[in-house]
Image (tube, rainbow, N blue to C red; front, side, top):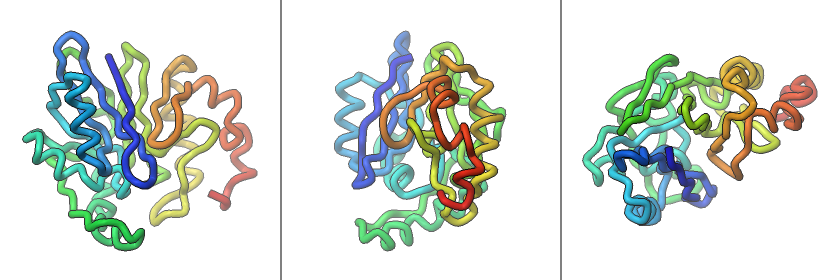
Length: 218
């Protein structure tokens, strides 16, 4: 599986492009905005896009998802239904940050943990990983050992839990029980910042080494 991360929006959110090398088919994950940049990258990498996917409903990840799905005439899928209130509130999220108007997003499919997404000769496993938001999901491709984790886990950090229906203990549990069993050699593609591995985060991430010290602070 080939992959690229394209920073978009004022929040430098990583829109992730995945491509099946054998067929050229691919998916776009979290197109939060700057669709001209996303479309240019799709063309440069010769991706035949068959789906738009979301990890969660925050503006920087989902703000332009509906528009891109229409432009490409493909389904929009994810996250889990617990994030519906975030997708309904996209216009208010944009207004809060003084950003251009955003539209409500209506996915064609909601995911549950244990679901899967196929494109080309590849299948992504869907993991429900609440904590940053209640309906957050992660997409994992087991053969290439790549996990697209949205805002669950970052290089040296974790997602914020001070947004509505965020929960610190739930997020730590999602990481330790949902992600870490995938294996230390799994590459982590986060919604912000650089690439890391689960092993590196297990060994060095202060939020995972001593979560009690950070409870109530993120």
